[in-house]
Image 1 (cartoon, rainbow, N blue to C red):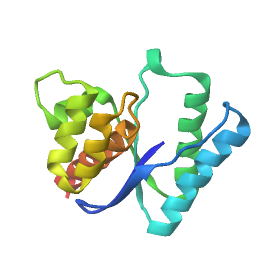
Image 2: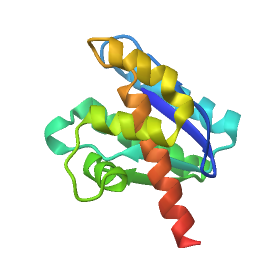
Image 3: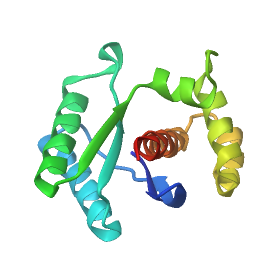
Length: 149
């Protein structure tokens, strides 16, 4: 699970949390625990999550999203959801891009991620891609919230 923490437009923390094991109530509970810990530690007031595409979703991913929404409601957090298409359009309006392109664009906007970008380029199976998506989600969320002010 990728995560990114922002204070305004500043990227404060980012990474990947591995949650091992088959899908179960215990695993979903661990996901909720990670999110709860991050929101508590950083005093987060907005969560931005990826909107799942129906063809790429599953019952368990839907349960995770429902759990995140319930957790957000119980903590009084605002939640924003964006599709991959919305992320692509935000970073590269009018063009179709792939995950690697999105990763490059996010890293160009946040040069502090260059180490993770270099590592991502050298490995066969994407590891940091979800973290880059989380940074992109935070970036688009801040931009939309900032425009509304």
